[in-house]
Length: 169
Image 1 (tube, rainbow, N blue to C red):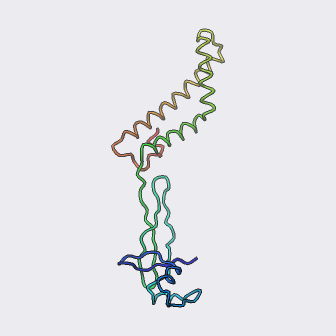
Image 2 (cartoon, rainbow, N blue to C red):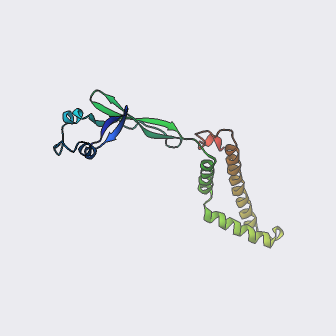
């Protein structure tokens, strides 16, 4: 489907064949009017530029304004930086924690720790001592991620590339 534009109060805006017919009820337009006929009514085809490459982790592409060049109205693209928020950092922290230790494993470790605590460290088997140490090491890694998350969240301005490993190591 072709997209068209027409200037309204000095600003280019999308404009449809339906709008053209509605605005000009006295004119009988062909089913598919030529670009030359449309130009007589100030209506031009819109050419959309190819979307440029961008890093979706901290940028987004938005369609730019309509501009006329020759007999074609063009819509370009603008790349804008995404403003990082504490919620985005918390989501990244959660993603990293779950990649390290899925929820089912966290529940199992918590249940195992409760059972071992009830049994008492003096009564643990060597296997239970090893399981406790492994669980403790994993919780320590999770605590580091949470600490890094807090550090990033408390920055005066959260960097747009907050999800890079350099901030989490």
